[in-house]
Image (tube, rainbow, N blue to C red; front, side, top):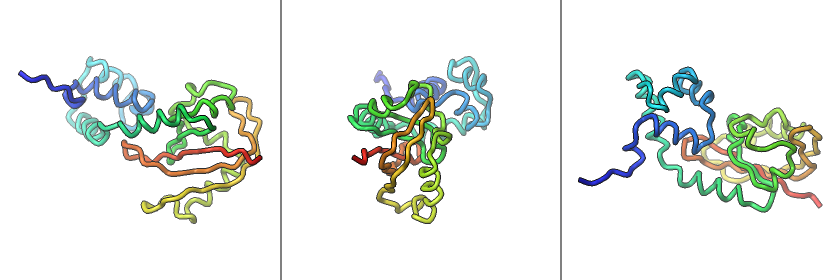
Length: 189
């Protein structure tokens, strides 16, 4: 008898918990995406409750599309060891996905409290202005390849200050089908 070591051979709850933890998604967020309560998702992950046929189909579709996270893990490792200020957010929600030590050193509170949370509320006026121009620049087109670079003034937010710098945005595909935005700061001096 041969042992199947594939992730797909694990029980659904284990696969779901693995999926969520590898992507640093909170139960509450994933539950909302799946249209269920956080408590129900927790019971699925613990193997205490099985999803209905309809819910199971949604979960299976989600997991089948996203079993391969090798690129995401490599990208996260590169960001988390980068010697310069850089972080990765979901391009759609601006939720923090990964952060370099140099970027974390700029912030006054731990990045751990921001994973899966939108950073949009910390945007400077220049960041907001550039965001509003992305449509015209073709940023959301599938064929986009390039970067957007601009200067931003600083902000002295008590949690997440932004030093005056040149910001570079690059789009990066993520294995779960989302698009990430790599945000790099370049010292203007």
